[in-house]
Amino acid sequence: MKHEDFLEAYLQDRCKIVEEALERYLPGKDNEPRELHAAMHYSVFAGGKRIRPILCLASAEACGGDLAPVMPVACALELIHTYSLIHDDLPSMDNDDFRRGKPTSHKVFGEATAILAGDALLTEAFALLSRAEKIRLAAERRLAVIQEIALAAGAAGMVGGQALDIRTDQQAPDIGALTDMHRRKTGALIMAAVKTGALIAGANDRKLSALAGYANHIGIAFQIADDILNVEGDETLMGKSTGSDAALGKVTCASLLGLEAAKARLAEEVGAATACIASFDARALPLRAIARFIMERKS
Amino acid sequence: MKHEDFLEAYLQDRCKIVEEALERYLPGKDNEPRELHAAMHYSVFAGGKRIRPILCLASAEACGGDLAPVMPVACALELIHTYSLIHDDLPSMDNDDFRRGKPTSHKVFGEATAILAGDALLTEAFALLSRAEKIRLAAERRLAVIQEIALAAGAAGMVGGQALDIRTDQQAPDIGALTDMHRRKTGALIMAAVKTGALIAGANDRKLSALAGYANHIGIAFQIADDILNVEGDETLMGKSTGSDAALGKVTCASLLGLEAAKARLAEEVGAATACIASFDARALPLRAIARFIMERKS
Image (cartoon, rainbow over all chains, first blue to last red; front, side):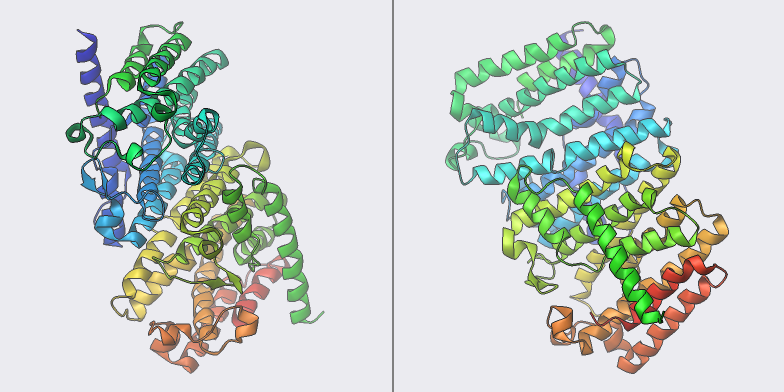
């Protein structure tokens, strides 16, 4: 099977099982209050690529672990990612009207319900992580997973990254500040996805450290690819307008380095990610494929 | 010692040790991003009464438990309560400019940072609950505590209550709907405080069930007392203007039942709370005192 065919079939299959699990884990749409639960479902099932849960599953697989005990953790990561998108899109933050071709949460449900839907999804993630019957894992290891995810999502990680991003609207960052911001805003949760998958699979320290290296490089690559797509992506495939970074005068890797240098840097990061897991056997094939997907994706 | 003197000394002492613990647990004010950490500290140290952490500690004491292993849980509850106040005060929610006599978070730091400070405090609560070295407790029991708090804080509990509260701005609730809304919005976290304190102290099912009854009644009492204070409280002591519910045409227990009937109901609930823990020994004295404090408080 060709690389592209394998990757497409793999991502489709994983996306499907992640979405089935999200349907099972999320409180039903008909629960009271209806508007709140409708808003939670609207954003969770708005067509995300499920990169974080898929990474979490692939990391466990690469370490020889089963998928079942990883699934609640993978889904919790997606709930946290979804909440962060809802809050980032709010009028007082990035003020985005569309995401993935659909109106953003506050455009559909109003600002108050959008804020509460984000709050509820974040809280639901920790309810899912701590639910006794759902994860067949030693309690100590489950606490370590919760700790890893809480630190990655909080002020030292993702929320801190968004706070830095707001600040860069006022003062232009250099490449160091920009990298630090992205390491927190998107890198930290990608790192947590890869590390918790490996933790659940019982990976040893050598493997954990190799996977942390992999996660670091694909986190950077992911952001550079985003910046490049914003310059030259296809609006129809993206479901949002491109060129918005430049129009807003936003400093990005692409604007700081130039488009060609940014592409070279992207290829370097993907190569470095793959090199980190060179010693892994064929079970790491999905992780290698995902690294290439990040570079080649069109949306 | 008279009841009032005991209570005052007890609450002051507990407030002090809770605030010292919050200072230890919360990431430092000088961490980057500064605005975010400053906003987190601003609201956490804005002079709250610390009712939830004090209840959590008192519940553990009533079951013969030590305070030390309860403290991180008590503080996590206060972080969650604080985040909920920040988000509830936002312009798109209750649009409050002052709380406890001080400008609300979004008035000081702007809306975006206020939203992020709330998000970060909620996340930090779960980081604190899962921090290995901080709680000397069996991992299984710690997971049960996290589960209890996550469910109380989420869509089925506190966030759901706020969503119902927003809805009541549009349609007037009857006393049943009002009670359900308050049970979620303030009752659920009070219930979690009392139950997790008892869980950590290793309470048996009989004690847990008695304490759940106590928590249910003081949760209702707490809200009725709030409504009464909004009608006839002293603005100087409260740090906010009174009469705002009536001015906004807000339906409350006081407006639905009438002031005198609301006061009678308050006394009934406090009596019922105390009756639930009648079989407890003198170590439940603080819980009994707190029930009376809820009825007699002036702010």
